[in-house]
Image (cartoon, rainbow, N blue to C red; front, top):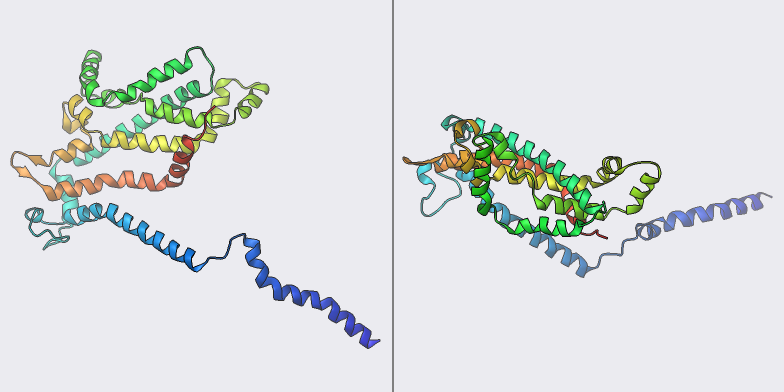
Length: 312
């Protein structure tokens, strides 16, 4: 009887032992990943090396600019060129703010960029919804004419826009810095393409439940378009932040309404150029845009990859 009990216990325990022994062999099958061969591992290493080298090539000008911002001004164009100067002047970053109203330039740029981005988002999302989701007579013809404005360079329209701003009495105002370039066809095209990739059945189901176009736009389309909105927000912010020609033309009192690109140009004068301070100011001006791109990096990759895939 004791022999039978031992036999039963061993037979019950043997499947457990087999499962434990085969557990290490079953795990690779559960992952669904094929085993990495030597050739595949070599290609992966080469791909990483190429990516790192490309990243180093693209970031090397920024590294040189950062170290140049701490050089003495007389060593900026010394031959042979050197990455680090004979002396390191960290105080150049603080001297930027005492050289002129640089803090005012930064504040104006933030206000113009944020306000302009909000206007662009409001106009582009509503216009993209009208062109992409609503059906009305002459929609495609109007959209083609709207896209044709992308072929007109901005330098061609600055004089007519300045005359228009002058007739409105908006010269040397924030309205003139924000509104003329807030109604762009690029943002409308981007949002239209993304909106057309959203299934129309979602909107039709909402209309069956009694939702109108405005409610469908606010509660269904926009929540599903966060990535595209993030892409448009970043592009619009960068466009306003880096704009130089139009603020230079429409602004009279640079100390009051000047933006950051105008402030960077102020380091060049009749008595010479402070290259060290200008480089330090350029490094400071890149911080907000760099933080914005890093913060929205996930949405940028997703939005750019999906914006042009839809369409019906």
